[in-house]
Image (spheres, rainbow, N blue to C red):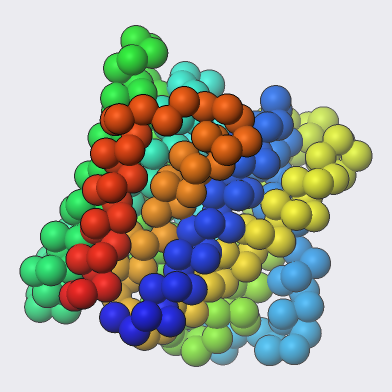
Length: 280
């Protein structure tokens, strides 16, 4: 894989970890999620102004993406009712590349070489192991983990759909501008029904998350979709989920979380997986 793609996706992983770091500091997770997602819109509108709308053939992917992103958002928010971010997030994110890899191997045999599969397993396995161990240490029920796995299924699904839609559009900015705008409409309807005060409080109570988190999230996913134009989605997804590595680093540096031998082992395994993917 070209080193420029690796670096761009690792940069996207950092931005992804950063906006989740901001949401983690928001007591109301629905408020934080809404602020980030609606924070996409100013940049999405600017992007669409310059690139135009996706071609007609891409719109089924745009609409499917909007629905799948809503499923991801709803199940993630509900998963957080039964577990903490350090338990739920790694399981959801780690499961996604494994599911995408399995789907790719079944539908398009031979696209992934053995080294790529090994790299994906190393990265995703380490991430999921971290989340499962956190879950066991907290001794909470399995509901949160089940919801996290379902969330991972939505992540895998929208990743596959978005990669195909972006390749058809040949513009990550155009495709994602339409997709995230459509998703904002659906998310707004959901929040109006189940979290009615969030939309009125969003900018007032979480302006930093709206502006900074929204921009970080938007640029992170546009970078990922750009990478999917020239690299397998399973590999790009696996590199993207190294955001967990950056989340660990941010926790140690800014939240005074303890660096343990277990965390060091997880970081080393993820880093080794990235090297294997680069060599592949």
